[in-house]
Amino acid sequence: MAPLSWRHHTLLQALLTRGPLSDRDFHALFTAVSGKNPATHQQLFNETLLKINKDLAYLQFELRACINQYDGMVYYGVVNNISDEESKLGTKYSVAQIAFYKGLLEAIVQEAGNDGRITSIDAINVRLDNQVIIVDGSQDSQSRLPTSIKNFSFSQKEKTLEELIRDRWLSSTSTGKIGLGTRSFLDLRSWFRANDIPSCVVCNEACIKASSCPNEGCNVRIHDYCLKKKFSQRKASRACPGCSTEWPRQDDEADGDDDVNEPGEDEAPSANRSSSKKRKKVKAELVEENDNAGPSTAVPRRTSRSTKAEAVEAAKEASAAGASQPTRTSKRRKK
Image 1 (cartoon, one colour):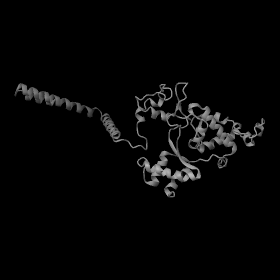
Image 2: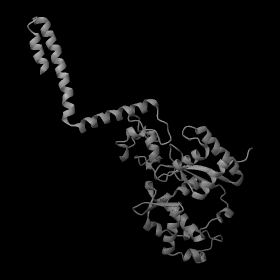
Image 3: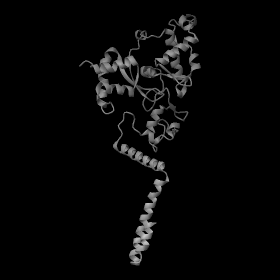
């Protein structure tokens, strides 16, 4: 098998140094190093990623794509597929910080509900002792917790939160809520499955932020962006795949039926759709031009049509009445 070229190394180096990249940034990088746009050269793009992953498999690494469930955007990143204790030691975080992250992770995926976020107050109050396993199982396990765990203060938790958000293991909103970050969605796919996190019936990925079936007895959950794809057509059935209950329309779906079928950033629009857009644009420009020109532009069009109609009528009268009517017809035309 041929070795990786400088183009492959450039893509890998960018992901390793910058961290996960959005599909827009990663596609732009691919275009820069290959001279080909992934939107129009999808096969070349897929073959490039396959080539990289074949070489990374030897090192137990993988170039992977994921969807950030909070904004629906696709991200690419390099992840470590080894989950043994030696690999866990290769991190800048302390034992207490890792235990704190695990506690946050459990709170977000198990207690946050469909929103997939917890408040910053709840995040600070996450307990660490539940994340440490005492091997001998003695009753006095609390006293045998590592000192770093027992003495992990609120200020240390706040500082760790900032680090985890900066490193994109976590994310935060303007209202102070804490959710998972892009790196968590990339790295924790196997963890989600091992811990029986409910999956989306459309894409089969873990549901961190999703919508539940309105039927309380049904366990079906679907990501918001998967809902838009599944129920994209206005007249399509909105029945739940599990119990056939009518799925309610989302708030941002009310006026979004036309937008659902619009091509994405990397999708080439069809010729018919493109020409339709152009016609709408030209029509809008003409209407705007008439509005800006005022009544002086619109009135003459109606006047010329009226004059033409009168002229036709006068001609008919002239042919019927004889030679005495030309003067009358001329007068009508002058009007």
